[in-house]
Image 1 (cartoon, helix red, strand yellow):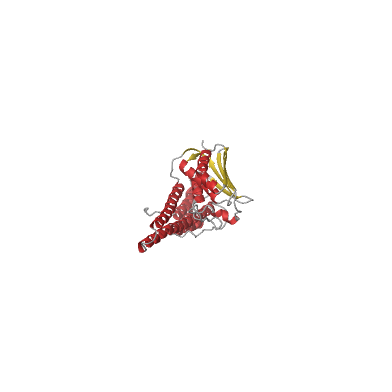
Image 2 (cartoon, one colour; image 1 turned 90 degrees about the horizontal axis):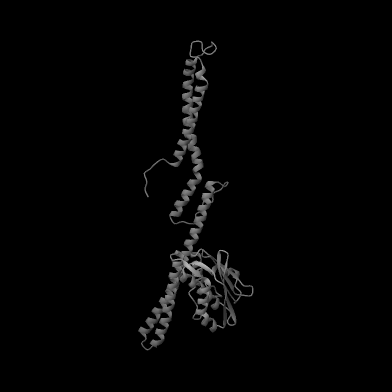
Length: 359
């Protein structure tokens, strides 16, 4: 937005300093006139019959006062200009950092030295903003690159299968169609997951009263065949936990947590426990499963998109697209909640979701 040119902040401060000194000098002269010169007799004998009189004092004092006022004005302008420049120097550094960030460089930091003051607080807040913005941009770039890679894989497989069917008519078309259907289904699932993740990040949904215990029972009922197939015991415990949000997104969150707990479990005879409850002004959903011990350095990466981890990769029909916990994290943040991950001492994972309770 272009604006008309005006005085700089430094010039305004310099003029303010000079004006203050000039007014202070004028008031001092007024006090001298009011309480000294006005009581000097205006006659030939002056005060106590001794010269000088008021006329001589005024004519002698006025030129000196004018010189003093001119000196105060010049001193105020020069001193104010220097003081304003010194005071506004941190602001100049912040402005240059903002211009640098506006050109796309988010790695620059001000790192202002000195004691804590208003400019130091502003620079620290600006550095913190740049750090968060840079982290967010880097995360989005990684997400876009990983999403492109994940989408390119099924498309490349589909093209290979189509080329094979076109070049070799003797191929079993039914088998090729079945493989194309599988690859296409995976691409659709990935696209829907990406759209759901984007929707959760934007927070564009209608909020309503939702009971997490009912969603837990629905998700458990849906995934019970999968649990029985893998010989996993699935239990739902606890009581009502009412929150305010999107029933669709929250159901997807619970479903993803329960499915992950089933898939990433022991080969057989494992357990999955889903617990819901209300604690004060917080509604809690906790999903706990058995499984192999998780390395501590793996936990921070579980909620990142497409980060499955070498010990979490599945090669069966439930391999997933690496967005399960990323979608959960996105939905929790969109509902102003918190997501906690902690390993079980004997192996497995405990996922705790805390959401604000419905009023």
